[in-house]
Amino acid sequence: MTKFLDADNKPILYGTDQDDSIFGTLSRAGIDRNKGGTKTIVDIGRFDNPLSGWIQNGIHYIGGAGNDTLVGTDYDDKLLGGDDNDLLDGLSGNDYLEGGKGNDRLVGEDGFDTYVYNSGDGFDTILDTDGQGNILYNDVTLTGGSQYGDSRVHRDANKHLYVDVGQGLMIDGNIMIKDYQSGNLNLTMTGAVAATNPQTTLDIVGDLASLNSGTDALGNIKTDPSQAEANREDSLYDSPGNDHILSGGGNDIITALRGGDDLIEAGSGQDKVNGGAGNDVIIGGADNDILAGGANDDRLYADAQISVADAITAGNNQTGSGLKGEWLAGESGDDTLIGGVGNDVLTGGGGNDLLIGGAGDDDISGDANYVA
Image (cartoon, rainbow, N blue to C red; front, side, top):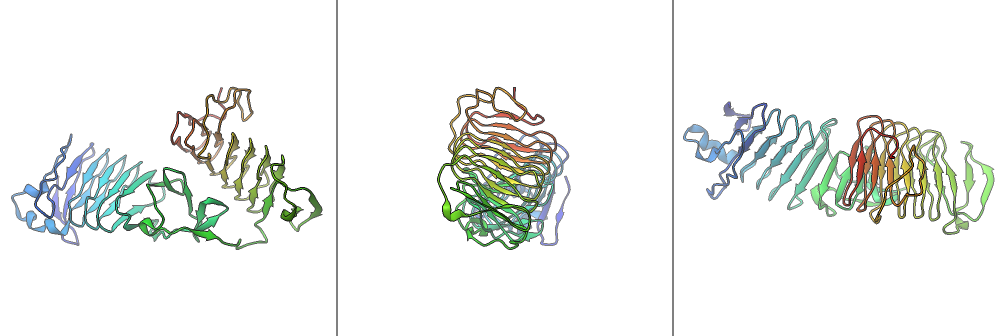
């Protein structure tokens, strides 16, 4: 292990390519906080050398490869996990935590902490006990977004999606903030805003008593939301643009095969949704739905109220008699599928998918288009 000072006069501790456990064990009060470890164990508070005089500047950890555990001090530390699946705990102080590649857990306690995520890093879980700090996402500080359709979904100017998934706040399917409360980590979610490009973005609404026979410039059927009738069984289709499709109640069929990055809210009822091409966001709503993302990189969310006794008995995106709950099918592309609190079925299909079952007894299959 190599030891020297960085530009902020923090002692640098390097891990190995193995699974290291490195602890900066000395608190501001001089209390030994060593929790033990399995491979590399460092007790920086007991170093009998000139570095001990620099500990009050915090420690700079570089974990390297391997599944590392890095635990800071009560000073301002910098923790870099490196490759693989790491646990970073800054303890108190204003810490900088960057998990790097792999699925990492980042923990901050008292102090203003900075959490860093870059594209391709994997799936990171953040737990910040005092809610103070911020998130740097590809070198941009996130500040939250405006409501984007469903009240659980928000989007910012850079098109980052924030979704309340019950257990916490999900950001772009890449970051989970556990126990999120409004305003935590400088993230504020506000109400809905009008579409910024009405020429290419349409609101398509179900549960209508009648449909206007005319069409718009994109060849879409025009609807009149003022004549709404609850719980109709609708068949809704998209346009070539980026659509917001809201089916309402009833057992609806939503077919979005004309492209575009669509936001689809299935609403209540036993709905069937096919997202087709485009980077779609599909939200199941209440009752037992079948959600298929289609091509490209999609995000599919089950509702948070399903209780399921059985799974799907007949597959290839078809419904068998045993269907009792939510089925999320990613198909091709790098998809994100997030289950609810019930017993869900998640099938990733082709591509590099992220499948999160959530609570309940879930059936998860990475490379499959059906469940038999």
